[in-house]
Amino acid sequence: MVPTSQQGDSSRYQVIAVDDEEPILNAVRRFLRSCGFDVHPYTDPRTALGQLEADPYSFDLMLLDVNLGVDVNGLDVLHRVKEIAPELPVVMLTADDKAYTALSAVRAGAFDYIVKPLEERDKVESSLAKAGRYGRLQREYRELKRKLRVEDQFSRIIGNSRAMREVFAKIDRAAKSDAPVLILGESGTGKELVAREIYENSDRSSKPFVVLNCGALPESLIDSQLFGHVKGAFTGANTNRTGTFDEANGGTVFLDEIGELPKEMQPRLLRVLQEGEVMPVGSSIPRKVDVRVIAATNQELEEQVEQQEFRQDLYYRLNVFTIGLPPLRSRMEDVPLLVKHFVEKWANKDGRPNLPSLTSDAYELLMKYRWPGNVRQLENAIRQALAYDPTNTQVDPMALPDKVRTGAVPGSNTATMPSLAPRRDGPNLDEFSWVAGMAFREVKDLIVEKFERGYVEHILIETKGNVSAAARYAGLDRANFRRLYHRLGINPDDYRIAK
Image 1 (spheres, rainbow, N blue to C red):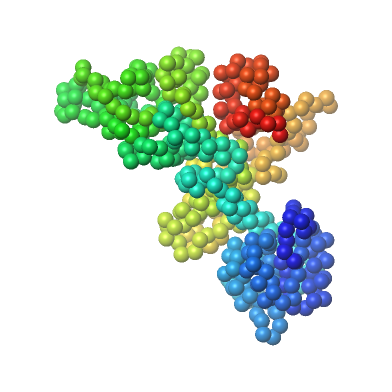
Image 2: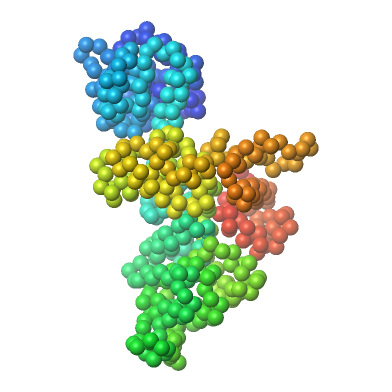
C-alpha cells in the first residue's frame, strides 16, 4: 500500500483514506480516482497509523472518517496523525453536518471538512486539491532538505536549485583561496551573506570581518573611513582615526556597492590591493596591512569601465574571482525552502508558541510573484504576513502584502511566457495574459532573460562547454560572452559533457 515512484502516477496526489465501512471506503476510492487521485484505503485506523509511522512522508493528504466504530474516535486518530506527520493535511469525512462537529475537527488540526455522501463533486475535488497542493509542497520541502549537502556548510544561504548549487561550489573554492572576490547580483540577492560565508570558511575566519557600504557614506568621509586620518588632517580631525583596512588587518574587508566608490578614491584602493599598504589622510607615511578584499555590486562594472567611471586596473584587481548571484525569479524552486526558513525565524523571534503555516492559496501567490526585490523582499513579505494576525496559526492570502497579491502572475507558478519564436500569423494577445499588473520594464526584463538564458545554454550544449567556441558561435568576444554567462549564473563546466 506504500506509494512509491513505481506505484501510480507520481503527478497525482497520494491520498491515504481511512473509513471503517468497506463499502463506503470503496465508493470513496472510486470517486477520488475519477477525480485524479491515487487512493490508498484502510478500514483499520491502526494499520493506517502504522503505515504513517513507517514512512510519514509518503502521502500528500489524508481523508479520515470522524466515526470509526464504537471504540475509535476519528478526532483521536487525527491527534495521533498530527504527532506522527504534523504537516500532513487531514480532511475529515463524516455524515454529520453540524457546525460543532466541523469546528471540533478544525480546532483539532484538520485541514478541511467534507460531508458524506460525496455528491458535490466540484466542491469535494477543490477541497482535496487544495489539501493535496499543500501536502505536496511540504513533501517537496522535506525532499529538498534531505538533498541539501553544501547548504549544511553554508548555513546562512538557503537554496537547492541548480543555480544555487553552483554558487555554493564557487563559495567553497573562494574560501580556499586568498584572492580578491567580486560578487555580482541584484539588490536583495544576498551578496553580504555570500561574503560572510567566504570569510567564515577561510583561513582568516579568526580575524576581523569589516563591512563598508561605499554608497552609504558622503564622498567627503569615504577617504577617512577607508584609510583613517591623522590628527589635524582637516577641520574637526582632533585625534588620529583608524580606518577600515587597519581595523580589518589580518582579516577581510567587504566593500559593498563598490560601483559607488568615487573615482578619486579608486587609486588609493588599488594601492591597497597592489602594495598591501594604506596612506591615512594627512600622513605621508604608508602603513602595511594584510587584508583580503571582497567587493560586491548590483551594477555592471564592465560598462562603468567602458564609460570611464570605474578604473580598468582596479576592476581587474577586484575581479580575480567572480561569483554571480541569480535573481529569485530564476530559482523559484527555492521559494518553499526560503518561506519555511523565514517563518521559523520570525515566529521564533516573536515568541509565538505555535509555528504558523501558510495556506495553499498563499503559497500559490508567493510562487506566482516575480520578486523584483529578491530574497530580501520575500523575507519582508513573510514578516509582514506573520504580523498581520499574531494569534493566527495559518497565513492566508489576505495577510500577504498588497504587491504580492495584486502582482502575482496568473496561470502558472513559473509565469509562462510567450514563445520567442517568430509568428507568421500575427501576435496572439492571449499569450501575454500573464503580464497583468506588471510594469513594461519588468515584463521586458523577464522575456529578455528567458531568451538570454535559453540561448546561452543552447550554444554551450552545442559546443560541449567550450567557451571560446561558444563565444564565436554567438558572435561575441570571449570577455563579453564570459560576462553574459556570469550574469546569468551559468557555469560552462556543467556542459563539458553533452546533456
